[in-house]
Length: 389
Image (cartoon, rainbow, N blue to C red; front, side):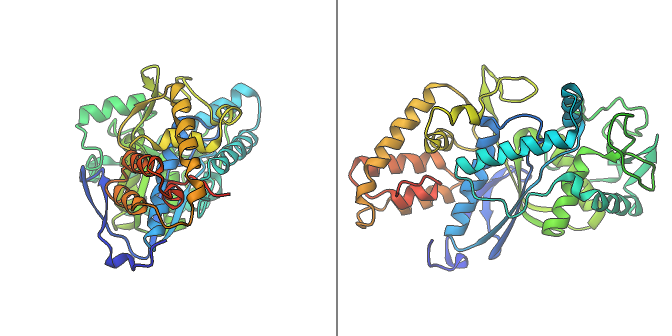
């Protein structure tokens, strides 16, 4: 860790989705972060791991710069996907969630991820969610219809300002991503559910609007507010969450509190396989638990960190061979640890990470230093690759 006061350093620059440009990221001594976590109905795949690796490396550099980081990663343990999977398997949805969350946590530990500051479950926040919905209703941004509560996008002038999509584009994505624009209880097809009646075989909680369960978007808003406060420094997630999830999350949060929700939005591009994004719904998955049976977990991490977070990339099995070779090269430099002969590589890696988290540039710098006989242990550690015994 650098001894410099973070206020005296050149600013770290990151792409902000809302502004669609790379801008200085200048938080205070404590950096509050929220990343959308898993819906635990299947095992961790490379797409998941790459996403959380991005925010892990960001935290490492922020801590190296002298900040404290508080990163909250939620667990969506009640929503349409997990209820559908539990129904198919004939198990209780919370039992399914517990088993898959445990498997996910083990994969994250194996990959050397920093532990989350907090990892709250959606079902732990039902009271918070009901209170949050009450705030949105009281401020006139929502309405009751058909036994549910809906957010009224017509009341929100900022709706669409995060995703920069046209209304027609938003309608297409809402239909593809669970927004149900054909719901007859909506005033506008883009309105989204805050509280919904439960089906007979689904969990239900009592509320002022009748028994039911939360909508998808409201869970993250309530948890972020409860864990981190009204305005958070950075919100992250996959680029597929920009719309509708994060657009809706921002709209309802600012409607409830009257304050800015997020200072900086940072999104991870998709990992593809066979030409499509790697996803549970498509089934084109490479599971971390399977890779761990055959490869050093540091090599798995290196295969992912060699790609820039804003560039979508295609998973190829040959990448693991390349990563294993790279790890061996870096390991060969381990004997030189502590000699002070790093050739400036640690500063090069710091500069690369400060330039929109340019991990490919950082990896190349370490490759060159290792090949030239330099000490790369500290530089590798900044990427979460532990070389020393």
